[in-house]
Image 1 (cartoon, rainbow over the protein chains, first blue to last red):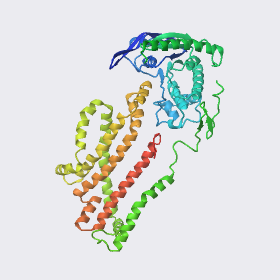
Image 2 (image 1 turned 180 degrees about the horizontal axis):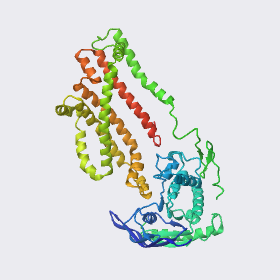
Image 3 (image 1 turned 90 degrees about the vertical axis):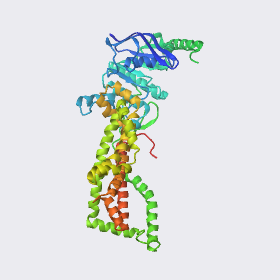
Image 4 (image 1 turned 180 degrees about the vertical axis):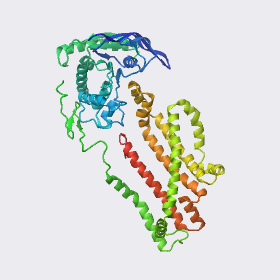
Length: 258
Length: 292
């Protein structure tokens, strides 16, 4: 951990809908240090994806400040890697060409890095495969490699394993932690799975909906690699869960979620 | 490094991924770009041949039995003889060459303009508002209707023939390119933004490949229309080409040659279309859609 990499202060964002403006984010404050693994969790409609898209520069029209290394975020760019829930690979390109995308594999520098990344995401032997030949987990690993090739300062992951089955998901979490520990890339990982949030993050940000704001940030002070079936893990999981349940209760008493 | 992740993968074997699902590892033998296997094509050919073969057999029988006069309906054998005579005399190669040249020149110009304008209107809404309404109006004018006008302006020479073909082959490619570009997945365009593609890269690496299925369909339809427009152009008045052969044969009551001309149009058209389908198959092998 080191210097503050991402600074979010007093962030507000509303959407115009047919029923009037809806506040998606309200006074969000988050300071992420270099090398952190932040997980963001909250019920649907709490603005977690919106938060991530604002950091990525995909969504604008907010008030407050969002800076990466002190500079205001002006639109998307390769310094902010983004992994979507779907892999979004180019179906007409092979695995290695997808990773390279607009860069040429004939460039020896690119070639070398692509090979290293294929090794890192454990896809050796699949370089020449097409996306339709890959399983969901493999395709998502290609998407991660594609983002990492561009040396992002921060990797933003929007429920990337949400569509995967439980076994693949557990495997992907391990792969992602390996990548994080090898590359030290700062991560912000949005999920709705409490286990996943506690397993991956050094801090878990719990959001509450309507308007979306940070309810609590729970530090997960467990050494990696973590084991889910331990008392200390379960204790922290319960801590996050109880906060999460308060959020859900709030939602029910407000009647807003119904 | 996790234990579960340390799997050494050998090409050509199967590997158990985290999900427990078996996944084939592609080896050298099953390269993604599969070599074309001729067996399915042959069985397709077999099924497609049943109706024509039966028709020809029946036709020949009817002709040999004298049920129809040769001037009215010559037998397949008589038509085949005319075909051979025409081929041996070199007339066939000459007229077919002229026709192919016209069709391709018209297709090349009409297709190129259609592709360019389709890309322009597909990419830019302003261009769409400016051009598309006019194009849609012109599209609905049958080109038989404008053929007299083209002849009035350009005479009976090569220019008017190629112009008729251009006016036909422009539209399918224009419309399908436009539709293809407008159907590019927004989610992929977002990837282009995240990866900081330049406008040129977005077009070259994202929009055009994603629109390729539609563009190829447009090309194929344009080619077909070019071939049909050729008949219109050559029947109106020409001194060479397959259409001229038919016209001349009509004046000389040489029914066999009319059939030869029709058959040439049919077979060469089908041949061009088949070549195109193979091309389509090779370029779009990455598609993950229903193959019948």
